[in-house]
Length: 295
Image 1 (spheres, rainbow, N blue to C red):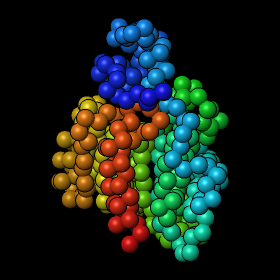
Image 2: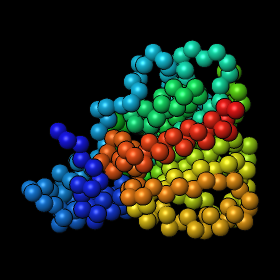
Image 3: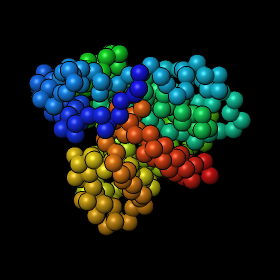
């Protein structure tokens, strides 16, 4: 069966799905409103199913012999107490390696984000992807349930857990002390936040994430790489104020907008995936990390 892409859906359906994914629209309301745009026998329910992630294919298998991966726990005194995540590294590293914190979307540590961590490890980094849902039992294996759980988190504690996770990476015995962060959607917002909260980060990459308050931007010392989608009006609305604050504070940053792309264009488990935009953004991301972490 041919894989669907964003162009196969009415733009209004994509807007409704974005609202649903980010908690602004209930499942029932999505199906009711999306049904108005259904054609050729489709329904609101079938549109939701078509737009939802499929984790059947992954770029790097969990048992790939080139990597070693495990679930680990660390203390988080200011957060929920303990954090748990997926730690991945090259199987045959010859020297200490730079590290990358991988921050998920608003569904916790799902198979897609684990795959992202494995891809990063194959580029000769230690990748750690914490699960914000660990205090509530962890990613439940169902995206709707995960989204529901996510709304129950205390974000002050969750942010403290992410700070703790980044600091753990500086202390790993096989790490070289350099720490980068990459986040997607919710995680992109966390990446921006961590840049304000941890002055000694070495590189921060945010994929279509919310921006920090302008008053916090002067705290940023790390170089930033920001990826946004042209059709992501919700996230892009905050960019002008962020850019003005970055310029005023003298922060080093790169900003890229991907023509024709939708929010979540890097997520290859959904029809919003844009292969060309994702490939270019990933090339830029890894070149950015190589420049600031590996050299």
